[in-house]
Each structure stands twice: as structure tokens, then as C-alpha cells.
Length: 484
Image (tube, rainbow, N blue to C red; front, side):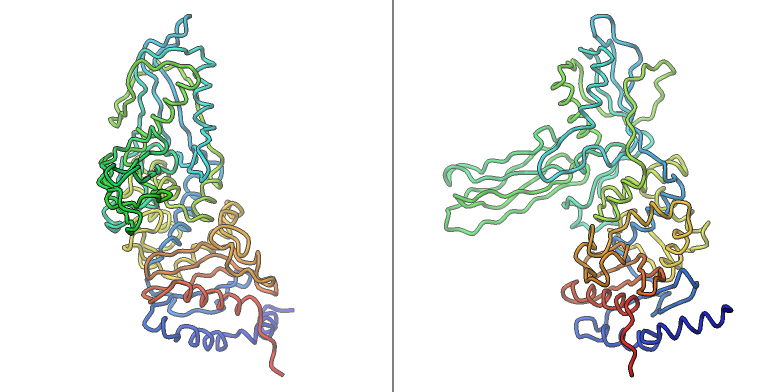
């Protein structure tokens, strides 16, 4: 069978979901009252036949939200490679003496690893930091006469980039970034009412060593009053101001607070593990951001390596984790240009896209996670990237990092019908008035498609554009019955 005949047979097979039928369906879905006036960019391309299955304004540039993480992870697999591992090293300038005393500092060189003891809902397990403390013990260290020094160069401390909205500064999903990551760079505040209305509420920081000071302006209110709480974080400042009132008898309120000095946070957690291991730190905990060389004489204490890159990519893509995405972007920058900051990261990703033939009129990103509303993509550019990644040496790891319909991550409860479960590997994206979805889907005929559906400027709940996106994917993947 020649190519033309095969193509005609394929078109006949998909006749119920032809371009005309999909166009009619799209018109019906997008004309719903809450979607009128919204902007869309849509493209489906068959990776088997390199043919367009359906598109609607596929060149229109829209805000992608967290679909930007697709681009960040693709650039990471290209620049860093699938076998990349984040590295955190520890050393001193001399070995401990026979009595177990280290006459000097312990230096910890951060490698911007977002996977060291990430936030857990139950408790912090500290498995990595405990193993690092064990390494010092195994080297015979019982007393450190000097300081515990956290070295961050070439990673820059960045608190709330100016491209993010002001309201995001207080949010635990808008992380501060430097060479260290611990507990997703957040801590938790517990606010409990005082014993009487005359007494202030009780505030506890969890974990207690988090570098956060609380300015408590909350009052204990009568049990009949309605409570409220608000808090304010200033970028780069360790002071958190909490305001409001909490009624007597309240079970307590709990807030996740972004920590503004990740290196100091990591160091405090590590110092706690040294204490638990019985290693005495006589000096201070301090952070060195200078990048000044320490000379050639180094006594290695530990070298910790993370899991392969796909582990970090899976967290950022399956769970849409901004913290991990920003650290992965900085790793791309450090490997590309030796500077690790948001601007260098955006430039490094753009360089990869240009090498792939994707220009700024197709994908233009300013951050790694998608919070910035200055990010712009079109469906055509995203599908071009997805097509390239499907043929990339890291294709298996890239696809494995995506959420799966009806199975995992942010797609666990979407497209979960028997016909669609497991058929879509995709990245979601949601911020106010933005709802995006891009990835791969498999049709009933076994064809793999790359797709992107971007929606901006809708009104009301995001459930409506999500439902429209899902319906379009179902129509493409599961043919409607042929009319008699």
C-alpha cells in the first residue's frame, strides 16, 4: 500500500472526528457563556504521520502557566542529560586530630538540589541530612572548633522575582531560591488561641530551627467572634508579621510560610543533625555567598548525589512543583553559562529553543515554573517542542515525568474514563484566568499525538475550560460512531 492510499484510509477511519467535526465541536464548547471572550490556541499533530489532526489559532501567543515546566524540563534533559545528578559536597581544610577535633571550619558546597528532604505532610524524616552527619562521624569528627559554612556560589539568592505578582510573595508556592533547598523552602506556623482573651495567642514555628522570626499581632477573641488571619512576608527578610484574631476554643490555624534564606535553613537543619549525632559545633553557622576560593588543600567529608534528573522532572511535572522547577532551571543556567540566577536560566532555556528552531514568537519564558504572566507560548511552539522531545534520546524519561490521565499527579482525576485512563501524558497549567494543557495522547487506533490546548481570559471556575479541553481530547482519541 502506497503512502497516499494509507493516508486516505487513515482519513476514512477518523472521518467521525475530521477537521470539520472537531471544528464544530470546538465552536460548541468555546461558545459556552463563561468561555465567550476567552482566547484559545490549540494544536493536535500525529507523530506517526507528521500530520495536523486539528488546530485553532495555533500561532496565538498566550500565557501558559505551569505548562512552562514542560519547556524547562525539556531544556534540562537537553543540557544536563538524563544521567545528571545534583551534587552537594562537604569538606574541611584539614583532617581531624586523633582526639576527633577538627581545628577549622566545615564547608558545605550547595548544588541547588531540590530533592534533599522535601516537604512532607506528616513530618520531616531527615534521611539525607542524617546520612551527611553520619559521614562526619565516620571520619572521626566529634568536635568542630570552627564554623559550619554554607557556600552558595555560583547560585544567587533570589527572593520573589519582580516578574511574579506581589500577592505571590506570601505564598508557599513562590519559593526563594539559592544553592540549597530544604523542606521545599517553607516552614509551618501554628497559631493557637491564648487561655483567655487577655492573653495573646501561642505561635509555634515548625520546624523550630527555621530561620523565621514572628511578629505576632494576633489577638485572642471571645468564642462568639469570627476569627481571621493574615500574614506578610518581605522578600529577603526573616521577619513574618501575622495579624488578626483567633477565638477561644479554636483548634488552631496553620500557615505555610516561605523561608527567605534557604542556605541558612539547610544549615540549621544540618546542625540539628550534628547535635543528634553527638558532634559538637563550637563555632557559628554562617552563609558564604562570596565565591572566593579556599585554596587547594581540602579534606573531603562527603559527596551526596541525588537521584537521576527524571526524579526532579517528575516532581515538577507530575505535581506541578514550582520549587523544583526553579531549581532545575538554575541548574540549566549553571551548566550553560556558569551563572545561576533567573535571568541566566531564562536565557539558557531560550538558547536551547533557538537551537531547536523554536523562536521567541513561539515560546518566550521568563521563569522556570510558569508563575510569571510575562511568559508566552503558542500551541504550535509547544507541539513543536513535544515532537522534538518524542524523538530525543531522553524521550522515555521526559514522557515518564508527565502526569498520567486517571493515574497520577495533576491528571489523576482527569480523563479517567475506561477509554481514556492511561492514554494521556501531559502537563497542566493553572493560574488566575489561565488554564492550559499540553502533552501526548494515544488514539483508539494506536496513533500517538502531540497536543497543546491553551486558554486565557475565561471567567468563572477553571473547571469549565478543563472540561472543554478534556472533551476535545476525547473526541480526537475516541472516534464517534459512524453515522449510518
